[in-house]
Image (cartoon, rainbow, N blue to C red; front, top):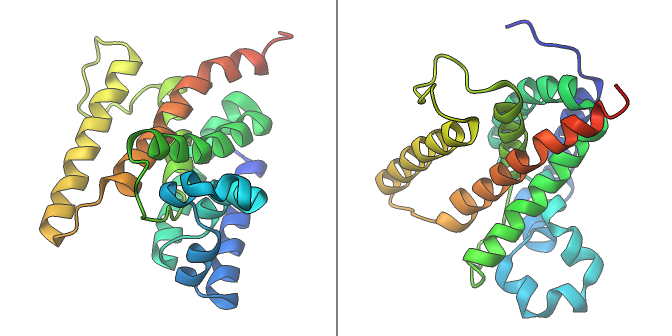
Length: 209
C-alpha cells in the first residue's frame, strides 16, 4: 500500500504512543484509567460539576490510555493508515476535529445508551472508528470487503458495522466476557461521529476552491 504523507497523523500517533508509555511507566495503565478515564456512571453521578476539568477531559484521557501496550500498537497502526488518507482529504485540522470529536462521540453514546455503566473507557477505539468512518465516507469501502456496491456509502458503512458487531460479540461470548458499553457502543458512537463530520469537513477544506 502506497500511503500518502501525513505529518499530523504521524504526530498524533507519536502523541498516543508517548501517552501510553508514560501512563504505563508513571502510574500503571489500570491506575491511570481509574484516576483519569471516562466512566458514564461517575460522570452522571456528579463528577461533571464536582471535578469539571478531569471529568470533561476524561474522554480524551481514555483515548490516550490503552488497556494494554499491545492494544495501543494495534490501534496505532490502523490510525496511521486511515489517518493519512483522511488527512490528505480534509487536512490536518479536519483530522484533528474528527479525532477529538470521535472520543467525545463515543462517550456521548455511552452516556445516552448505557448511563449506568461502571466500565471505564480505554484506548483509541472511538477515535479510531471516527477516523475510519470518515475514511469510508470520503473514499468508500475497499473492494475486498463484502458490501452492497449499489447502495449509498452510509448503507455500506452500516453493513460493515454489523459485521464488526457480530465478530466482536462472537469473541466476547467465546471468552465469556460480554460488555457492550465500552467495547461496542463507544466505538459505534465514534464511527457515527466520523461519518457525520466527513463531508462537512471536506466542504470546509475546499471552501475557497
